[in-house]
Length: 138
Image (cartoon, rainbow, N blue to C red; front, top):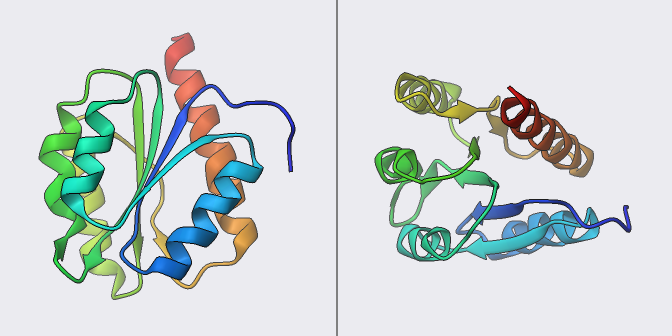
């Protein structure tokens, strides 16, 4: 846990309420400004109101859609953005989503395959923040 505020927002798209809560609690404990959403319209509305760097954690397999559908709208975001996909299904779909996002010039971290240990998410937050800071320094 950290007591220092982090200079970015964490945006979580997860339709499983318990996992969404656990991920949000982890981000908050690490000092991030966390915004968690159960669906794609909520994520896009939240993102539209954010200023500054954003780390987005997007579930691929949603009850009401496919998280990879957000690649287009997310690629239009003006400001530093790094995304990671989360998947509990086969890795092939997540790899495809990652390749599509990278093809649009987006910063994309490795896919988080569910279930993943609590520490894995904490490490992803740290790595993704460092990637945003490194890109900003260039």
